[in-house]
Amino acid sequence: MTHLAPPVLAIDLGKTSCRARITGGSAEEPTVLAEAHGHGAPGLADHEGAELSARAVMDTVSQLPAALLAEVRHVGIGAAGVEAAPHQVAAFTAELRLALGATIAVVNDALAAHAGAFAGGPGTVLIAGTGAVVFDVDAAGAVRQIDGWGPWLGDEGSGRWIGQEGLEACMRAFDGRGPATALLADAEALAGTIPALPLWVSSTGAPARQLGTFAPTVIARAEQGDEVAAGIVDGACAHLAASAAAAGSGAVCVVGGIASQPYFAAHLATAMREVGVDLVGPRGDALDGARLVALDTAISYAGRVVRDDVHAV
Image: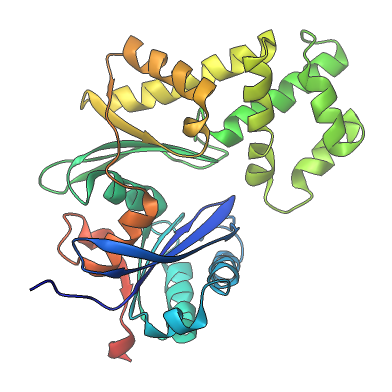
């Protein structure tokens, strides 16, 4: 007899957006009951990370049917900064447990993506979104991280990196220090004038996310033949391929927002082949991973999951 579990709420909390999904049915064959999309948060390790992250989650969850939410007993969340900010994570999980009346399980957002891609098993995943990181999990559950060191020390080839490189190229073109590029007009449209761009970058209080919003423009201009933009895309793909190759597994699953853009994906695949890395398709997404984290305490990297049990209080 197939066991029908209570609905499970899965959350994929990124810097740009937050996704929520309620699934029901059996653990082996879940059925999507409702989904919602909302704004992201800077990350748990950032200033006011717990408050901003909880707000992003609750704003997104508020779009889901109240009757379904009332039945949820387990919530799985993938969020940035889990391992870097334990006190923020504790405050974040406690607030959500009280608000949702459910057991909360939180894991690094990249590991949630990994869990979805490999159904909780071993493998190597490259997540290329606003940030960029590679996680390699071996058969014993040992986890190795490559890059993912944040916007100021790493995340090379990420959406933030591409956007920043694009805007820096615009500043050089404006000054006469670098070649002309169609990106200059795009950048001017963001802030009204090129000299106003530094203020535009910091205006939201989340400069990495702000810089990342320019990445789609850079990729689009590269596809149209702009040499400066094309060089930035090639550089990003080289960085990502180098990170993937450093894992040493020879096969990598690539997920994330910028990696889903066809032009960028094609160039990234070429860069991967040049460093001897094969691409494999994901079995699921980060929401599937978050659901697995919520339900499965026996996954190989369960020690990296932070759990706040509603029954323990």
